[in-house]
Length: 521
Image (cartoon, rainbow, N blue to C red):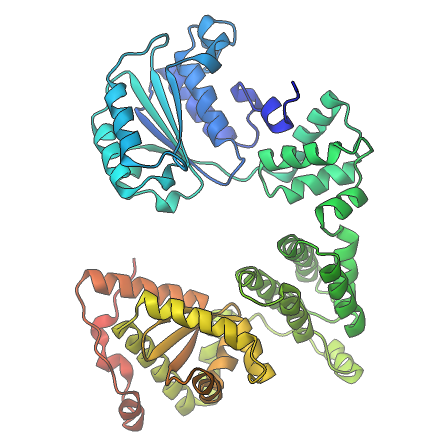
């Protein structure tokens, strides 16, 4: 019963063992050497990157009786009894997030330290505090006792009020590099007499996504079998795919082998491969191929631009994994989009020179030159429908239509091409009359907007509604959302615009609501 899991056994107890955060560690050590200790810090970043471990080592160092170059000596009474020290108070905000807990903390903060120089309060997952708890904490951060230091840790810095952030020194922890993870895992394996091949070390490091805790937990799990840890063992136990599997799939795409592509994807489905891990590996290896094409100028069938679009489509599919559709069906559709329907088309494509670089954001502008009048109308429609959606956009409408879209994706009455569009889209804003959807690929935005009448007819018939719909790129949506937020703060009121009247009279919509054009700095 004395067994301790690896991530706890190898939790750093000094700065030297904290991996991958060199800049942060040096800065903290310098502040200790120079006596420039702040009253509040906030450590943000992905899970398992050393935030809480750094907080504990820092707490030990600032209270150490004989610090060495800004690090704890490990020999003094305070260092030896650190784990039982009552002056180091850890609070898990995920389970103690109420105002009463913070008030209790405030009541005790006035008491001087029992053993060390400082009382240190480490609040983990601080973003989980309630608004009232944040307000109570704010009062303490404004005028803290000289003997108290706060270290706040969070994986969601965007959910921490700016009033709290402005009173803390902020340190952003980064994902740990693959090479650093591999070296640390190798060290642990040598210490624990764990037999493992180099390919397996690399695989564990990649699966952990930059988190040391996840890497050690995975190593711990795999070592329980008592056999040598290999890449094949990881593939079987963790439901992942090897680099060879990924290359086989991409080779089939390159060689336009439709049957093999679909068979491999179906195999991954049947093996219950983790979809997110599969996509991330596909993106990594496809990116290497794209870079090689860019450097050498040589390619088999897909050029650099097509590879880039393919990677963007894969990335966009990750945000759609929570919809009620088989993820591997999405992957099949993505691959089919880049496979040719017959060999003749492939031969033609091979003989075609690689197209010029095209900035995705100016694709629509180039199309304007081909058909100016039609594109002016479409631009006006886009702007009108964005405006009209913002007139009465509400969360209740958004939640309602999101559920209905899921049902539409499962309906047999929806044509395949429209179902494909809906699967590749996300509803981001909704009113009682208008919907705004985003697509991850700029070309999908254009194709969808060209089919607006057909899409609206099918959706409105199924839902018994009369929605006006528009598709935007994710970048355009972010810009429009920021404008909307600024407009609301400036008390600009959106007024409904009659779409038919504006188009019929060929009025430039920019003249109608210039007031809504707010500069985003």
